[in-house]
Image (cartoon, rainbow, N blue to C red; front, side, top):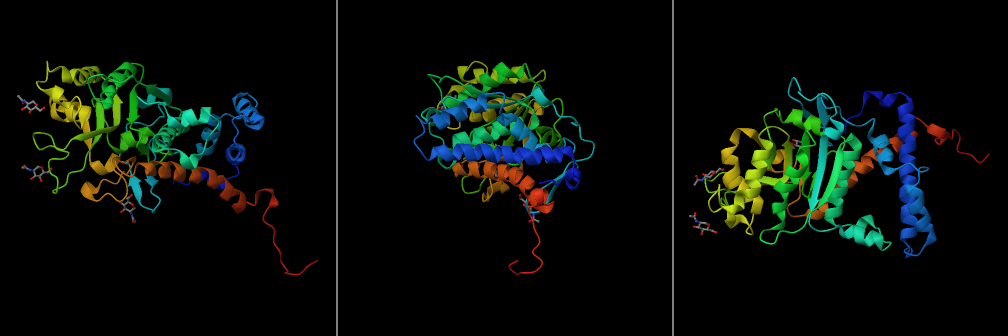
Length: 366
Ligand SMILES: *[C@@H]1O[C@H](CO)[C@@H](O)[C@H](O)[C@H]1NC(C)=O
Ligand SMILES: *[C@@H]1O[C@H](CO)[C@@H](O)[C@H](O)[C@H]1NC(C)=O
Ligand SMILES: *[C@@H]1O[C@H](CO)[C@@H](O)[C@H](O)[C@H]1NC(C)=O
């Protein structure tokens, strides 16, 4: 985590973020308290719910913004620090120097409604019991709040003739027109660092205006050489994390991809309607060969996999994708939020705000 240079001073921003920390903890405390009762009928809970929606209360978007305003990395921050002290350094002359705000859409896409929403509507909420889908999606939404990006959760209907993940190309096509970039993540993928903006990653990966797609490769292993490889022995790119840039080739690519299983432009693409890896295989087998120069393929470790994966060093440097131990997507989210909340608490102790730290010079009873 970056320690900003403003951190030492007692700026008004600092005071704000300290109070934001308390507001958030207060909200969490309020939520935790009635959850121990069956609060479906509890008027306590109801009044909290109304209060949260009223103007008198600080909405969560403001709380998140305040918590992160001093710890956000700038789009062209020269480097960011990993928790173990290593630095990730930007190459020289970063292209993206300004936050793109609502020109960026963070996109979630599901055919299922959130299970946690159903539970919430029955008066139950418990972070500890949340499944990975809500955990990942809350990470994406929070990331959008931190950086002021647009956010959408598209609830798509099922296809009758193909696997659910085929919803990706049409959903991307239907929203890209209004944005410069869409950042799409599967529910088991997450931003490793909520404080690092997407502009910084675009700089880090040297994304150019002609790139329509950015995706990370899947791992390759000698034990199963064909598992993630196309028919030319080239490793697939994973569609669980995609940056889609709005340029002249984007719509043609999305259309070609969406229509691939029609078998008109791409013979036999329909074989991927149901078998794994569905739209991901179609993209790897066919689409990328027609649009090679517009697709930026990242090494697996940049934006795929998670710590502990050995093959191809896929350890999710900036984007994590938990193919297997999916519930760990919640751990990344939790570590980020805990860091943001406990920093202002640490400041209280470091700067002795409110005189809570008292010296006892002589250990005697007065
Ligand atoms: C820190 O962790 C990263 C992986 O996130 C690794 O590449 C790097 O070598 C580690 N640095 C140190 C000093 O251990
Ligand atoms: C397939 O590609 C891998 C590298 O991705 C390489 O090690 C292997 O030798 C290739 N196999 C064939 C049959 O060309
Ligand atoms: C089409 O795909 C099927 C697998 O679904 C395969 O068995 C068949 O050989 C393919 N046909 C051609 C012409 O490639």
